[in-house]
Image (cartoon, rainbow, N blue to C red):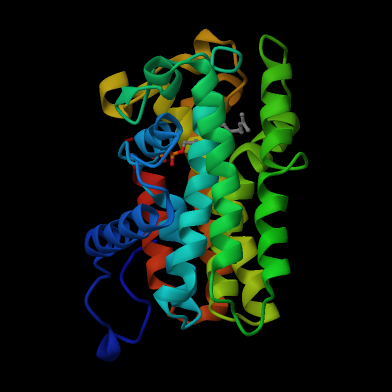
Length: 308
Ligand code: GRG
């Protein structure tokens, strides 16, 4: 796999500038989030401070990047995808705040900083998560609209990814599986919902913002599903191979909580192979884009090789 565009040598362009893409898109997403959210001084200030604290704590912005890259693959305009990129980041950040709570993973650090409840207390952290989830739907509802896909379809997409059949279902299975023997299919069930659903939804929403065809949406879904699964396998690997400083969150938590992970079930080497195979499946899904999905390809490769 290579991030170089697959074209005949005569027409081959320079390799895709992923760092440049990530820097510019992160800046655009941060500026838009800043506009969409109430100011930190808006009453009641505590909740807006808490929402902003986690949202601007330095996340990698991978879901927005995937959303914007999918829009680009379909020839869309960044301005049409930006509200949806922000909406998925709000949902993601809410899930992290709640996941870190004492009743869930009970973590002290996230994104290299103290977790929301450690700074603002449990009550405000719960409310900050709730408010970010709600904010996501407000941002999507207020967006200008997209010719081929209605606001209803877009809102449904967000609700589906975040709801009790996907994100929440994954978290429920994860909680209930702690300390239990988990089979590989059950682990796949958890990863599909806890992680892949929102990543896949981010990709699909990017395509939808660009008025993608049904065939393009199918290809993006295939891509997002496999990239999402690879993302969690890599996350599991990093949990046992990296330090807390590198990750910006407590390393070794999965082992400590006796959570089933790919490394704990099949070992590190096989886990790496699984992540590589899933990424290859993601690449294959992009074939219909005939070289126009360079940003998505570069992101898939980056996510496979990431170290945090
Ligand atoms: C609704 C309480 C509740 C939870 C939903 C998403 C989730 C379930 C829990 C979050 C914790 C977790 C391990 C989720 C899996 C997805 C994942 C690997 C999140 C970390 O994403 P990154 O690495 O984080 O993109 P940053 O901080 O860079 O945005």
